[in-house]
Image (tube, rainbow, N blue to C red; front, side, top):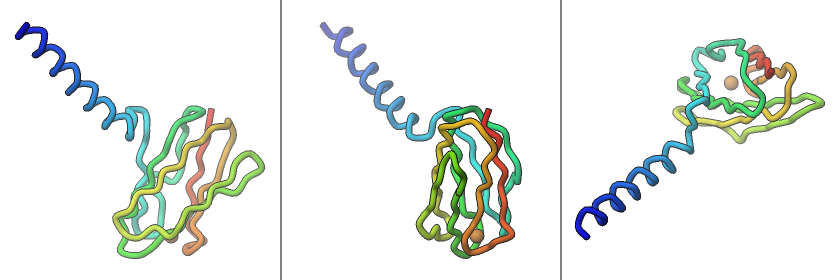
Length: 110
Ligand SMILES: [Cu+2]
């Protein structure tokens, strides 16, 4: 049936769009790295939420989280690249940069 085929095709297209969107979920948040700082420099998120760190500077960053509850260490992050960190546990976490010791983002996970 013609109509049935159209519906299946439309459904497949919608499913594909959803799959693409899920790589950057709706509740994800983006932190900008600019002028050797995180913007914003403090944020409150929900447990399990994901932050994307977007390097808007013209030089490399390399970010890390070092705490008893979680640790994360990125590779070198060239300009324009995005690093993704998910925070699975509640608590307060400091995100820092190996290259720029003054960079600090405080993440409160509820
Ligand atoms: Cu840096």
